[in-house]
Each structure stands twice: as C-alpha cells, then as structure tokens.
Length: 427
Image 1 (cartoon, rainbow, N blue to C red):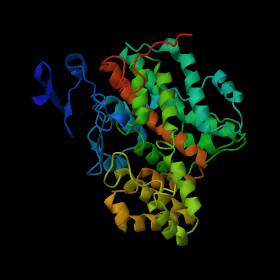
Image 2 (cartoon, helix red, strand yellow):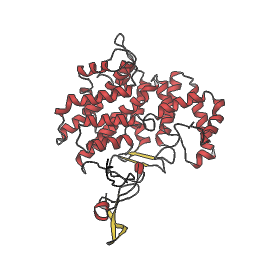
Image 3 (cartoon, one colour):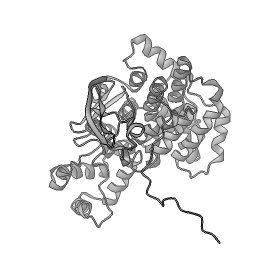
Image 4 (cartoon, helix red, strand yellow):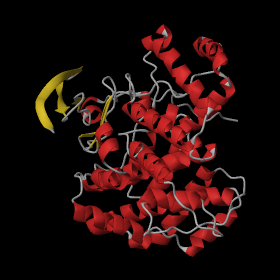
C-alpha cells in the first residue's frame, strides 16, 4: 500500500486551491486522505453511518460487495470453507499466514491450555436472572473476566498480547456454553481438552455431568464451518466498536465485551434470530406470496429478514456455503423442517421477483445459518452467542493489528445542528 497517485483531489478555500492525497490499497477503491482536512481547511467530512469512510488501514479481510467476494488474508472464503478449519483460520487471521503443521499443533495446544474459567467466574453466573438472554450474560461475564487478567496483559509486549488473544479464543466457548446452561438451569459443564474446538463446545452446550456426551462428527464439522464463516467481516459495527475501544488503550478483554454488546443488535448479529421468527410467522409455503406482497408494501412493517446486505450487492459468498451445509445436516439428522421448505421456496421466488432483483436483495449468511443452528438443536437465543464466539477471532486479530499500528485514540467529530451560543436568561 502507498501513495501511488499522491495528488488527485483539489479543495478550494479562501486561501486558494489545495490538493489532498489519494491512497491506494491492494484491492478495492482508493481513499482520499482527509486527515488534514480540518487542520488545513477548517472543514469536516460528513458521512453518517461511515458508508464512504475508511477508518483505518487493515490487511486482514477484504470484501468486494459488487462481485460477492470475501477474502481472509487473500484466501477466498469458499476455499477456506472446503479445505481449512476454524483454528487454522484463526491462526491465519491473527498472524497473516497459514500455519505449518508444527505451528498449528502448538496453536491448538495453546488454546486447549486456556479453556477453563476461574472458579470465581463460574460463581459470577449466579448473579444473573435465570431467564436472562445468553448474550446479556456473555457481555457481563466477559467484562468481569478483564478484572481477573488486567495485570497479566502488557500491551507493549508482543508475546503477552498474543497470549491474551489466545486466552479469549479459548475461553469464549466455555463462557457461551455456560451462559446457556445457566439460563436453562443445567449444571455448567467443564471443557474437555481431548476434544476438538468445535466438539468441545457442543459437549459443554448439550452434555450433562451425569452422562457422557458423544459428539456427532457431522455436527462438529457443521459448527466448525459456522465459526469459520463468521470469523471476520472487515470493519463491521462490532469490529469498529472493538477498534475504537482499543484505540484508548483499554484492556483487550473489555474491548471484546464492547464488541459483544454491539453484535447483540438485531441489525447485526441478531439477524439470524429474526430470520427464524420471520419464517415462523409466514408459517407455510402457501403463505409465501402474501409475505412477498407485504414485504413490498412500504406501509407494512413486515420485512424479509436475511435478504440484502449493507456491503454485498451480489450473493453473499458465505450464503452459498452454508446453504449446502444446512441441507446436508438436515438430511443427516433425518429432519423434515418445514421452515427449510419455506426458506427454499422464498429464496427461489425472491431471486426471480423484479422488485428484489432490482434492489439486489439476495440471501445473506443469516438466511440459512439460523436454520442450520436450529436443526442442530440450538435454541434461538443462542444464535447470536455462537456468532460472538466465532467473531472473537476477528476482534482479537483487529486488536493485535491496531496495537502495532495505533494512530491514536479514535475521536470522530460532528456537524453541530443545535442552538448557537445564547445567554442564560436573567431573572
């Protein structure tokens, strides 16, 4: 990356014309460097929602929304989904290259070493209401975890930074599974380090202390795929939240807690829950035409959830992968899920409907991930928790990147539209 076309944009003010440099990345659109816009020209850039703003330089993930391309460190998501696994992708995102066999083995062993939670943290769960949403519990528990490791994290030391990142990746399945177990009144089950990362999560989530839990390898592979597909997605809302918190030098565990809170929003991580609610509301295949008509009606609050994406203006490449996985798992389990029939018919109709085609409202990853998780036995309120578990890898990767290239604390400005200065009224 560099300034291959250094002066391309001209800004005119009372002192004359000045030029702003253009920065080129490896892929994607170039960026106008406006860092001196306010200092030199007394102007601010106005971009609500950051639709046209590059908030940082990053070498982790690339998205081409027009072409439907997603790359992790240059590798297409489809190829990684076919040939790789979640922990290998975690190493790739964190360190920039695929691991050698020795590096992969060491990384897996490091993760296994940190899977347990402090016993006092397990007692912390008892302070929540039994009917609390697992995401609410995760925000609180991860935030509390920062109190246990604050003195152990030296952000100036590369080795300690990487250990903090591995610790978070290792503990998140335990935290998520315990959040669910507590919410339904089950005893919290300890991790089994003789299991794979995905299998360990499943046995903690669905197993009971009173019996052995045999993990279905097909389901373990499916949940590993879900983790892989959700590992990172460029500068989305939760990742941007983590980076902004990290820019202040905050404890990295607290930064991840802020990401979980941001992810919880229905427009972000909660979208796959909304898809299941929508399909349930539609009810039967026969009701699909009515649902399509309602979605087109601007006066009707009903919307087709799982269609369209803020970035993708083509098919979400993750959707193609997870659609097949959902069908394979349902076939393996012998489940005839009416919601899948509704989803398939809905997708086929919407892809041919001029209204949706014109607006480029293609199915996204949330459209099928909820069906897949539901088939595997996950309750709806755990969908976003699974997302948070997977995205932790992306968050810590961005945290590591930011600590090496910190441009100072993030401090957006505003276009003030309130009252001008006015005197306090005299009595």
